Image 1 (cartoon, rainbow, N blue to C red):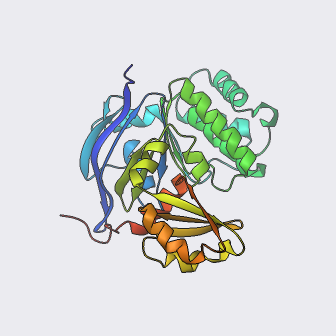
Image 2 (image 1 turned 45 degrees about the vertical axis):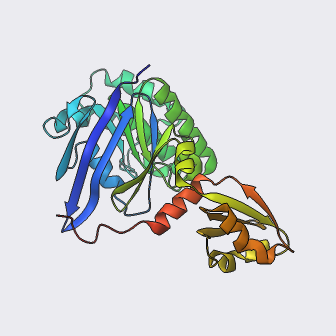
Length: 310
């Protein structure tokens, strides 16, 4: 069964002061899908999200969001999207309930009391409804921000690094909420630096310096990278990273506890590279990970943002 597209954009380009921040970006995302948006800091993720939700006008490119034209129907797109920014943007001197009521008024929503009550229940905020937002921990602030995003019942959620600085339990609970929302048909585009979060997405998109470098499911992206890996275990294996990474055929070498994880595109070259330590370290072929791909792409991406392209 074909899933209807909620985001369908092509060639999105944005320049600031002669710098190409987003360079001919394409994305198609279906209803109820969760897409992890990955890339180093300054790669253009936030700018892309702002173009998709209608806050920024692209210099080039076109597309539709929820069937609405990205350029001529920006105001309507903004009304149908929930956008959660990197920083907590609600009023810290208001209670949770007062914050949600204020947001409901801004959107001009009817039945405000009912909507706020449902949002409090849905995000587990009811018992803290009269607590000041400024007294909340990072995890509870994120719940409040998500509740505010959902008040007007959007069909798309754009989340910009929503769990940065949040503890692991709060992150897991937040992601359980995201999957629950996706099951109702809400499409989610979420930027993150956490590989475990990326792996919880249905698909991922990797962008560096405004250019899309990888797209697909986690498995598809790892396979397409062509990376192979060896794991070394033995006395002092974790101390060999710098020496082995300098060897021909090695793209990355990183310690994980007492073991060493080595990556490259040619398994034979990898085995040759680690052979000087074969008498003391046991080397085993292991699958490359999404983090391996992320680091490899980041290290070898070219910075196209220095000067705008004609």
